Length: 92
Image (tube, rainbow, N blue to C red):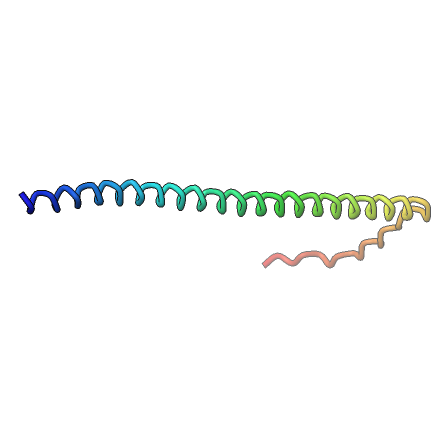
């Protein structure tokens, strides 16, 4: 009977170890998910910030183009260069 007693002890330890292992794994996975969520949120915030910045730059560029158009309109239309007569195309 002495041999069966240590075996029973190992089964209890194995069960406790398995429960502890499961709890450790659960905590590890939860921690990993929190880290991933934090990183994704930081990336998302960075992307949104860059998109906003790009939108502002596009607005500035659009305003500059409109200012240039208004400036050109005030000075008068630019006269296009008269086209130079092209030599007649030769048939081969």
